[in-house]
Image (cartoon, helix red, strand yellow):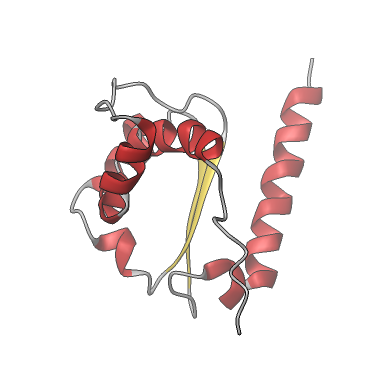
Length: 124
């Protein structure tokens, strides 16, 4: 018999996560879970047009169909949803699970991003 450990996130986690997901132009993929999440939360509200205004980086697999799913979504994310996007990377040899398929490349990009942010904060 297989023991099911229960949900990966609890309702409180979802109540924090879901509104953030809704604010991004890439959220339509989450539409498959939205009805269940909204029901659990007692309803969801549409995006209020806010943006992510801290340094950000996007890393995905070049073969991940989700990146190409909604025409214009990537450009919208780069130009308005993430006002301080400092990196956009589509990695060869990876699809939807880029962190598992190209872990060395992902780690290299994340470490460089974090080091750059540390240097930017340290400047007077």
